[in-house]
Image 1 (cartoon, rainbow, N blue to C red):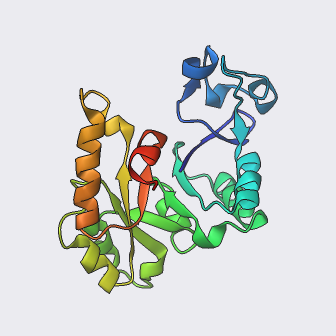
Image 2: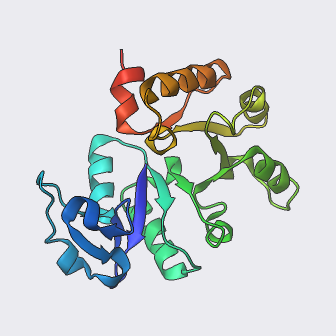
Length: 206
């Protein structure tokens, strides 16, 4: 899962935050800096900002599927088409998942599989041209309830549960609570998870 943002000169990059302060010590928004400048940033641990193109290249080399979280607003077909071109360039579109925005949903429907709640899926199923392969049921332990996984799979809809550090960040025993939620989701039939790295080695490796 990667967070997409766009630079002042319209280069798509991967960066969780709106600015570069937390990791690079630069209190400037992504949207006001050009890619040439951003490429020079370096964290105290030696990491650098990568463009979407660079990350996709590495994903193809490592046979890694992608989930894209759109962190910029607005209906910008130029940027949207740039995302599609890059997905196709690296043969990643077929299995790509997207966490979209209200403004981008209409454009990407049928082009990249989009996240939905059960209510959204039920509403979408009433629309002309609906195809369950265009969507996936997505959410945390409060969103994917008992029976939702079976309901979705019977209708040919992929299910992906989210277990994010953000949800547990203020809790003293966050690993224990996350473990309980993961087991609950597994018991509800979930087999695909979008997780933060903190949880991977603890709960998803043998």
